[in-house]
Image (cartoon, rainbow, N blue to C red):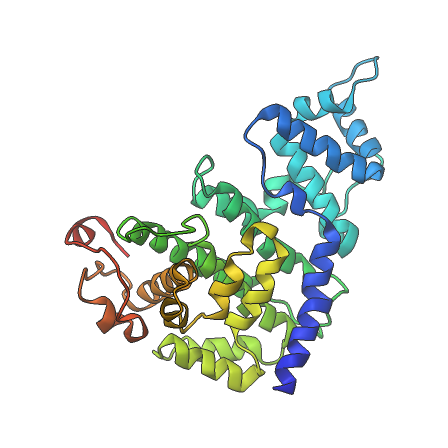
Length: 339
C-alpha cells in the first residue's frame, strides 16, 4: 500500500496542484445570460491584469480605431466564447510554460487556433451537443484531458522522454463512446439522479488511467494494453490495478473529481467504482446511480461492440456485479439503441 500512497502524493503534487494553480475553474461554466458572461470574463481579467494589455493589442489589430475601447466592448467584439478560450489557454500556460501554448506578448496572438489548442475540451462539447445541457460538464472534463496532454510536455512531470499523445487520444475516444452509451441508456432508467454527471464518470475513469501513465510511465501503458485483451469483470480489473500500482483508478478518480468544483458529487461515486451496490445497500441512490450507470455504459461498449443492447433481463448476464440494477429497459432499446 505504500506504493499507492506514493502515487497519491505524486497525484496531488504533480497533477492536481498544478491544475489548481491555473485558476481556470471560474471560466469552466458559462452563465446563460450574455451580460453575465461578459461580467465573468471581466472579473477574470481583473484577477489577472497582466493579460489585459496583450488582449487589447490583439483586439486592436483586428479592429483598428483611434479611441480607447472599454474591456467589456473588446470582449463583445471578440465574442465571449473566443475570449474565454483565449483566457483559459493563457492561464494554463502561466503554470505549464510550454511553447505549444505560448502567446506572442507583442501581438496577443496564440500559437494556433484556440479550438485546436483545446482540442479535447472543444471536441467533448461538440460530441455531446454545443447547446445541450451537458455542454459545460463535457467541456470541463475535456479540459482535464487537455491539461494532462500539455502537462506531459512540461517540466512538471518527469517522463524520462516518454510521450503519451496516442494513449491519451485513445482514452479520450473511449470515454466519449462510453459516455454516449450512457446517454442512450439514461432515458430507460427511472429517476436517474445527477444525470448531467452520469456520462462524466467514464471520462473520470479514463483520466485516472492517463494519470497512471504519467505517474508510472514505465508500467502504465503496457499494463493497460495487456488488460484490454482480458475479459475480466470490473472488480477484478480494479484488483489487478491495485496489485500492480498499489491503488486503482476508482480511488484516483475520487481525487481527480476535486479538480472541478461542479464534479464534487462524483467523489463518492468513484470511490465505490466496481462495487456500487455498497451505496445501494446504504441508501445512497444518487451515488449508486452515477457509479452503476458509468460501469454499465463502459462495459456494454467494451463487450457488446456492434450489438444491440439485449434489453431487460440481460444486465445480470452481461455485468454480474450489477445484476440487481433497477433499469427500466424495454424492447424499444433493441430497436433504437445501437451500441
